[in-house]
Length: 120
Length: 241
Image: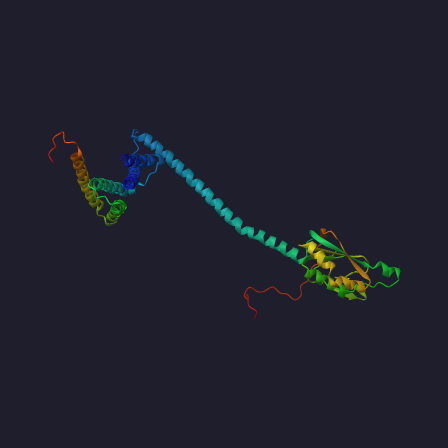
């Protein structure tokens, strides 16, 4: 449970310590990649809580989503259409859905000494 | 299985964290506010322009030195030619050579003198044969009594005297100096060679210096006359016609 959080911290530390910077024109791609990674991570957590977790789906989804999002943004830049908005929209919506499902699952696991709040 | 799941999650989380940190660093703008007024900015602009003109000057100087080096390179062709000429001169025998070699001393057999036998001049055939044999044994430079043996050296009988390039070889002992890359091998092969035996028939013996030593061979003293060679013309490139 704590291991992934620890890994996240390690990654952040590594990134800050290496003082690595990418050119500003590529920061768009990286932001979309971050979004895709977040989406996959939360999707994986949700699947884990729902006992639907499949390692192959998770790992392939992680890399595939990142690449797809980045290439979509790339295509958008070259076509003059802000295609990365599509990726942001899709991942954003899914992110919210996943987090909502996770929240509900976690809430339903709580001991029911408090009255279950109304589902929103 | 569960452990594996945790591991995969950790890896993914690490990558995510890494990307986040990089993105954070990239987006982070320098937090320096512009506080200078127009005149300060103009002054800095002036400074930068001065730096630029200085750099342009430096570039020009460096380019000039590149051009200098290029001309040096073309003139160094002359150096190469000189070196080649030196090499060719050495090969042709126009320079004195020093190196490890063997000294052969040809002198009459003492017994023959005691017996009163006549010791003739060394015959040109015998000497030629010896020199041919030396060349066969990888001799690089040869001199006979201080006369450098080169490609055009003539050894022949003139009026009953054996002469090498016009210098008579009448007095004994005759000293032959040989420089070879492997002088030990040369002296070993000479010791068992047939032509040394042939000398004995003419009442001469050949002493080969046992220890290969440093030998100096003088340069060819005359000028080499080339009669049957002509420089190839530029237009007749490579053809035999």
